[in-house]
Amino acid sequence: MWQEKIETMPREELEALQSERLMNQVKRMYERVPLFKERMDEKGLTPDDIRGIEDLHKLPFSYKQDLRDYYPYGLFAEPLSNISRVHASSGTTGKKIVVGYTKKDLDDWSDCVARMMHAIGLDNNDFIQVSYGYGLFTGGLGAHGGAERIGATVIPTSSGNTSNQLQTMVDFGSTCLCCTPSYALYLGEAAEEAGLTDKLQLKAGIFGAEPWSEDMRHEIEKKLHLKAYDIYGLSEIMGPGVSYECEYQAGMHVCEDMFIPEIIDPDTLEVLPAGEKGELVFTTITKEGFPLIRYRTRDICSLNYEKCKCGRTHVRMNKPQGRTDDMLIIRGVNVFPSQIEEVLLKVSGDITPNYQIIVDRVNNTDTFDINVEMSEHLFSDDIKSIEKTEKLIKEKLRDVLGISAGVHLVNPKSITRSEGKAKRVIDKRKI
Image (tube, rainbow, N blue to C red):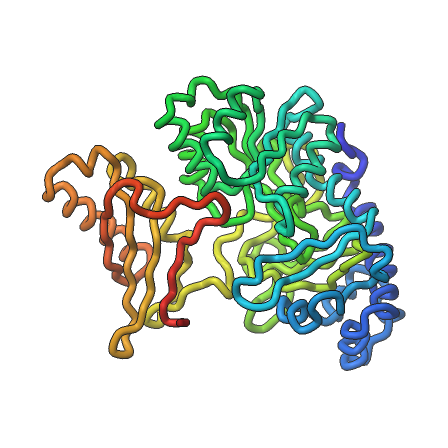
């Protein structure tokens, strides 16, 4: 079994390993990363004060803004001559988030993704089509490395050119698809329209890089005739593979020999007990090129330390239920796009899973509108049926959110499809 010894290590042994690696990482960063040393000094801490994971809470937090402030290489812990690759975020809200990897970091990353692929039953007989974008985005090359590590045949299509993606799946016999969930849904729709669904040989899909609900999972499975699995990661910590679902899909196993997760109260910053929901924080304990201590991800979730049915002992994180920074505050009410998606996907038959949230401010009052695509069936129906569906969605949203939204059913295919991360929210108040 892939790295069975690590993944099924008894808790006490795993925590001893984490403690050793944490102490080494703190000492190394104190010596090599000026910002980390400065923050340690401000707290009156030295590396000798950290004697194990029980002292993790004493260490300073790190933030996304740090990466922007020290752009591009100011937080690296290795000389650039030892950096084998860099990745970066899109930089759409400011400077790019640049991260660096040594050769060992890249090997560890491939191991993380390979663990997931093995956990869901993939092996060297599989054809894995990687339809995440390649380049500075971590998705494509991250999935690629994991597929190679298990000996599978990699089909590196990258994103875009949907008709070619589908034909490649059919002609090459792809058995696993890796891409964003929104693009998977788009591929499913396109396969139906092209009459190719029954020709696909897909058995599994590994989808991540954006939030998605259980209802969206079922919709993807229905359209592509595969089993859809969640993978979690972020560029700042590693990329896809920081945590992943196994065959039982009861949360995502964190690769705890490389990353220590915590859940904190985002307001008080106190560490919360196991099982409580709060903000996810990660510490990298094996990364060489770009290590981070107590990085605030802004993702909201909880951790489950019970042993999984699969036998793995690594903690499982539940699917993030929103973000502290992507949360919309509308008329004083906290609204998460994932809540809206769950409501929409339960109105089956009359609408598609494609929607867009538009928030604006008129005369000092927030406006909140949601455009939702009608199904072909509803589009061909009478106006009363459309109005009835709009009313139903409005009522369900008000029950869940505690706030009213303007719901507008729009024509099929009228909302722009995405080949990468879906643009679900347009907040005009920030313009």
